[in-house]
View 1: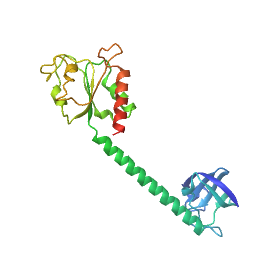
View 2 (view 1 turned 135 degrees about the vertical axis):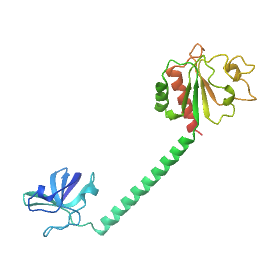
View 3 (view 1 turned 45 degrees about the horizontal axis):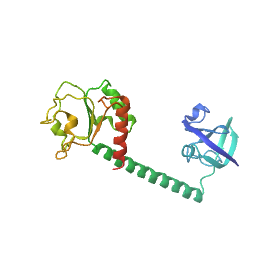
View 4 (view 1 turned 120 degrees about the horizontal axis):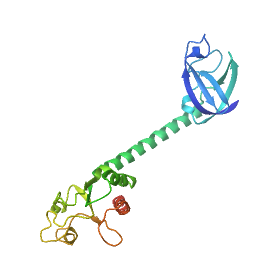
Amino acid sequence: METHKIISVKNVCGRELNPRWKSDMQVVVTDKGEFIDNMPGITFGRYSPGFDWQSSIGKTVSNIQVISNSGHLWLNRPPLTASEIERRAEEIAYQTAAKITTDIINKTATQDYKKRKGILVLGASAIKSKDIKGIARSNGIDPDRICIEDEYNKNTIDINILVNCRRYDWLLIGPTAHNLLGLGDYNSLLSRLTDEKNPIIPHIILSEYAGSLKITKENIRNAFQEIAKKESAQ
């Protein structure tokens, strides 16, 4: 008896192997060569019924008899014993349970992912929107969450909507106009951030080392990393 590692299996028309064979056959490639066998459960002459080689791909199978017949080498494997059937059933049950567990984890993670609200990037930027979203994606943040308001000289957003906001979780602040809507008595968005009675949503200021506001690939990447880290801890 021999032991073979099963590499691949394909079903072929029997006539491809012998003009007289009408039934389909299995062509089995192992670490020791190419062989044939009947389809699972099909008997040929005195040999054992065909073995289910497909289920053993990537595995090592023992108790194999190699038979030369009709110009081909046959893999002949006796039917599974009771203990082998029990072990196979345990393997299938374990794999099924593992898959169900993984599916539940992935589904829960996906649902949690979708519960997240948007991230508003506010301020003039020389970085293309697709690049900003690409940076978000590479740092574990859904790019569909990203909303970009980068028209410096246009009052496109009222700052008051960022108080108790239902649309955004985070605000990333770059260079903005001084006359934004909703500033009231404040002369800039940065000074508005000091209002503790009506606080704006969590925010990150995007600036250069010198302190001037500027959106760069580096500081927006750092911001996304900070957001991802804080959200994963929630």
